[in-house]
Length: 332
Ligand code: UT7
Image 1 (tube, rainbow, N blue to C red):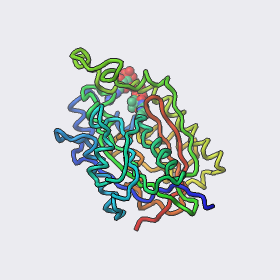
Image 2: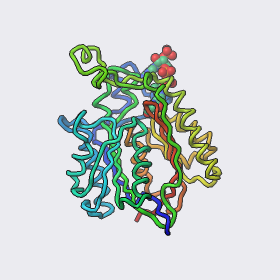
Image 3: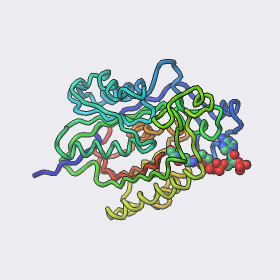
């Protein structure tokens, strides 16, 4: 029997037009371009400003970009996994709406939430459905409208996050390409360090929670940074080791774009040369579920069939992990 592996066969993306630069942030909070650049690597981020438009707007655009580029019939999609931390609404799955809007009328859909690791975990789920032989086309979308949960008077968080969306298609592969191995982790110790206090079942919305600004992201940056550096570097080094990959065997590091210093620390542990580390944090900031597919989209030209990619992410919860994937195509 031929082994089925799960390969990424197409990529799409969308970022909003509005650019929030470090220079503009300087006029909003007590910060400066030099601090933001040296501490995070971010120069600007995109924000979805139009009233009444949520995460689904960007997710639909990214999926439509993929469908047009790959020239696929959306009616053939079996499943749409929507990785997001900022669903359109607390109830009514965003993915279900997105699937209907893109014409994936034969697909079922659900949302997957694991903060900044949502897309990485989604890759594992999408691949498992394909490897099992159950489905043939799984669309994984990572999209977040972080501007909807960020306090633009809090300099500790508003300089970091941005909005965006990316999508990939997983399909069966019979040449051994696609997802090879994964190490996924989580630890509830992280709940105190990166969270939104109100709006959930513990502390439902009230006048007090709004007045106390408890519907915005809180982050203890220093602590999260410490865990992110060791977490991402550990799993990335381990996945190389257990797949007998040397630094020369790895073609690309596709790391969550939260902080350039965290990406560099991970790359250093893997002993990777700088040119193998894909980076676009300077353009988008941290787009949460969208960072990994946005990297694939921006650097799709560079990726060659058979290349060894190591994905790595770290996010709230805590959630983190690494995936080893063999790239399956050369861009036409
Ligand atoms: O994606 C999900 C996972 N999230 C992450 O991976 C994020 C992890 N954390 C980080 O990336 C970093 O911790 C931050 C970028 C959030 C902060 O950088 P840091 O180097 O850890 O700075 P810090 O919080 O230790 O603050 C250093 C100093 C403080 O001043 P004092 O106490 O030394 O006088 C802060 O008050 O920088 C100050 N500061 C700022 N200054 C200018 C904090 N934010 C700012 C700011 N502009 N925006």
